[in-house]
Amino acid sequence: MFLGTHVNGLDAKGRASVPADFRAVVRAEGLEGVYCWPSPEDGCLVGCGGALMNRYKAMADDLDLFDPMRDALAHSVFAGVRMLGFDANGRITLPDGFVAHAGLDGQIAFVGLADHFEIWAPQAYEVHREAQRARLRESRRNGRSARGTST
Image (cartoon, rainbow, N blue to C red; front, top):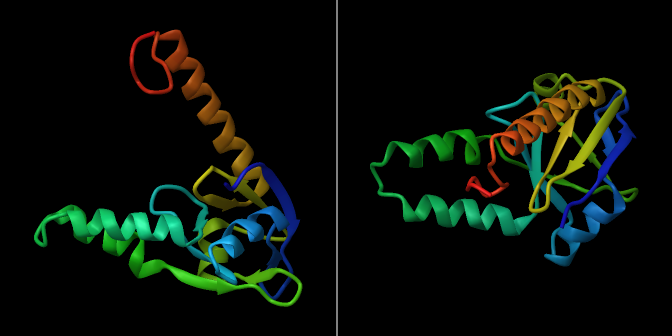
């Protein structure tokens, strides 16, 4: 699982060291890199190993060939995915368009979210995390559990 928040440097060439425990997750799947794409919902990048990519593929396969959600998934995830290989130092090189999408400059936050991770500009992530915490507090005040049912 991808866990924790790790802030690392991003050099002028777009290289960043992937946290060692994140590398271990994908290496356990036999990969020497991570799948990565710009988030269609937030100003961040999404990263994962093969397990989640296989789940996305299975989800797409379960949709009718003419279901508009199939195209939405394909264009939002598959069309933007890049396999970013690890160099000898465990770094990945983020494409310029990815760096621009997430507003990355100097420091980046790798945010573990169990089956995937996100890459954020640290200040933007703090704002996002606080909004998520507020959403959780509001949900609890309204008597909903994390599963969306009444407690």
